[in-house]
Each structure stands twice: as C-alpha cells, then as structure tokens.
Length: 106
Image (cartoon, rainbow, N blue to C red; front, side, top):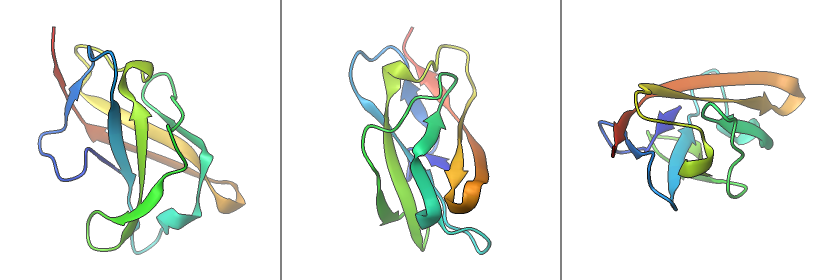
C-alpha cells in the first residue's frame, strides 16, 4: 500500500477538521488490486471506511486501487509513525498493509 501516492514523506495533518487521505492498494506480480472488496477495507486505528468506491489508477506502473479516507475519522494522531489498511479481496482473501507517516500539526 502507499499512503499519499507520489509523496515522500507521507505527511498527514491529524488536526485538520476536513479533508481526506488518499491511499493506494498496489497491484503486484502476485496480487491484483482490482479484486479488493472496497466495502471491507478499513484504514487507520479506527478502521475507517473509504469515502467512495475507489477507482483504478496507475500509481507505480500498473493499475492500483486508489481510495480516500476522512482523515479526522481514522484515529491517526500525534506520535503515530505508520498507518495500516485491512480488508478482503474477492474469495475472502485477507489483505493487510502499512506505510510510514509523519504527522503535521500540534
């Protein structure tokens, strides 16, 4: 997975009242992100659901699943250094991935 694709470091403003955090679930040689059941995907400590059904987008050279999550609902807070995604792909295959984050704000 990749939080804020195209950004390095992955800056997250945990104090922002509104806004979203983009998260890409990456297609690999062994995994097709198009098989992810978006309704099962949770992000951050609170397991927040995506704001929409997502869309396929080339993030790293192939078609990846791009989702957006309400930052204030994720449970990400000052001091966190990573955030994770959990969910299922079709057929009940469990998915799990984490990426590093840097928190902005007080």
